[in-house]
View 1: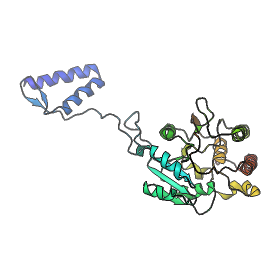
View 2 (view 1 turned 90 degrees about the vertical axis):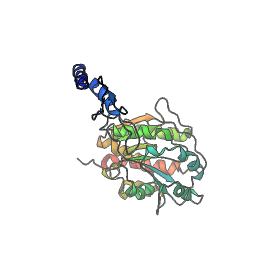
View 3 (view 1 turned 120 degrees about the horizontal axis):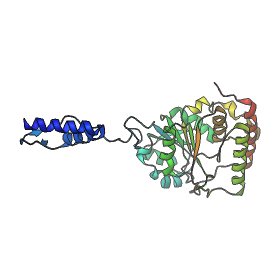
View 4 (view 1 turned 30 degrees about the horizontal axis):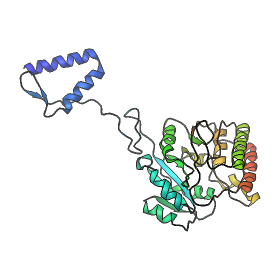
Length: 307
């Protein structure tokens, strides 16, 4: 009897002090082993518990602010072409809880890159057509994540920024760029020509297409997977200017242009670009530069965002 009175007093005090204290005491009752000793020597085993602390998302392991928030699933998309040195050094830095899928799209490596990807358990797509944009077009049907993070395994992308990029998307942004040119970031891979080219093209995209970028060209970024189709980045005609110069250009500049024209929520975080590790630089400065210039000008009249 005294035990029941004692519990009644606890409940009364809890009611006066508010919900937070209520939950604390019932957590103690529920967790106690073998139970809560009462004044009459009996034991009460609590059956009510307060809410558990927020758990890591099932998808990514990122800790959220509340139990109802769940991280969208994340695919890390890794284009490769003879990048075995970088893969061996960089990919072990990618923690399992950061992404739900690691998808390697390989352009026909002969240095063991494909074998390494398989040995690590990554999903692997061997592209049929040469060129970086064909790698994306052939890989995207295999992307399972709601968010895609495009990542260079040659050392240019910093693995620890992957969760920061994904969290920004979960917070409501459509695209998040790891900018090499924001304060606090630097590029150790730029030379005078590429630094000027990146600056000039980014300024041109901002002026012509309403962007607010500091780095419109970098590969290392996160965005909602559906944007690849919503912005029609899979269409051959979107890259027609490359044929004038006998080359195959990348996806990122067009993605930046169309995301800006669509009025999407875009932000940037500082992201260093370390020097390349091994392998061969694939950049074709003059052909790509000419094709990107024509593409940037062409987009003024060619593409209209869908309402």
